[in-house]
Image (cartoon, rainbow, N blue to C red):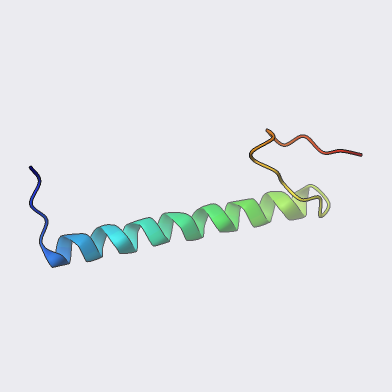
Length: 49
């Protein structure tokens, strides 16, 4: 059983939010580089048309 203190939980929350932010920024850069086509990760990046 893992015991986490409140500060540990906050640290991990900030870390997770930071990773989500970085992933969003990378997705935005890919979006711009692809010429504004929406990037669908679920379909593996396939675009219809």
